Image (tube, rainbow over all chains, first blue to last red; front, side, top):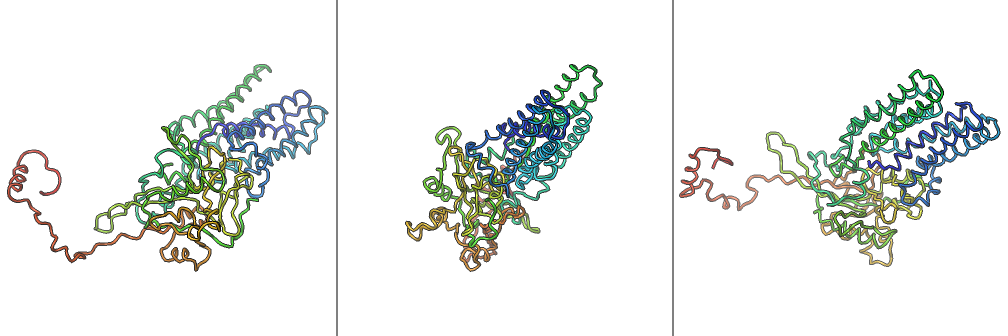
Length: 295
Length: 264
């Protein structure tokens, strides 16, 4: 799949943003006033910034409002509805903590659940696609949710929880890569089933339908950069999980130093997740490539 | 709503005969011609006369080589070239419809045709992601998703002569490799053709239940000995070279170095 920067940015940033909103909704950290304002500002900047970025790849972003209508069948529509609901409910909760010095716990809990539901709906947009076997498995939502929770805990300054959640997310990541590598072969879809000619002999793409490129090849058959995927996995894993966990475990005295180290851990985590998300798209193989004899 | 209908009154679709298709791409061109001028946004081309031309097509013809396996002690038969037209299969369980967030994609109850209402399409591309067959292409100029309409603006069009009220690709095919009809009616010509020729689904494991069917190529004729009554009269005249060529052949065989080819 073509790794569109807008979608990588969207899933990375909004995943973190909604993860942070989840913890803020549960009162972690238990803050009010200005400190609370800063936390919510970061969370909304990430979540809303990500959502806005996602509209950049649309052919007609001005019609995006119509995307709220089909929640009965469409995960993309459900994501839109969930995201708006989460932002509205958490907005009410934020008004309470920032301006009124009160915590409307019920809004916080509903907002936290909706925030996590938003991440889940995002992941299901990908996980529902049978056409992309690497995405079509339960580890895809597990990955999105564990990343979001780990990043959210890190941003919320929940050191102990962040350490544990980062380790879990790292393990989910390793599992996703391990199972994902076998997914296409396991799907049973081959050039033989794609053409229906398998019982006659070995099928080979002899001549493509067009000499140039087209939308299908540009969007679904992205092979550039896959050759570096093993190195990028190491970089993504190191920056996203290993380094932040190490930094969290360092015994550090002093508030300023602690904040600096936490900031480095957050930036490292974001860079690692972006790298992992790039691979998520670049390594994903769509079955339509089989008609071109490509993956 | 982009919910799929439980059933459709008819299942209009195409039957494509892989035995007959000669790979001329006439269906591709007539499809582009009709559909760029009629239903919805035109099918644009990008850089059409430049170094990297590309464009939107609703129908494309692939060509595959099939190499049959050796059978027993017989050598492997010659590889077969199969031309393979591919367009929307108007699936009964169309994943492209249910993933659509705006309701722009829908499947018609009256005839099962899968269509895009372009005024509602936001160009997110998710329907194309969900289609295993590559039947949908996002038009870069219009920013909306394009797909085969089964020439919905021809098949019910009273302004056209009756023989033209079939999809443009079917009307054009010079080999008669494309057939159009109601695949939901077991007594229709297309359904009989599918039954007779063991029509098949593409990627049945995807669970999309395509309406369009493909007729597999017929097995190649097995030539029996002496099927041609003139064959004895047409036996090779000189299997072993004689005369000057024979002497030259033997002389060259005696020279050191490798001899390639057969025994001669």
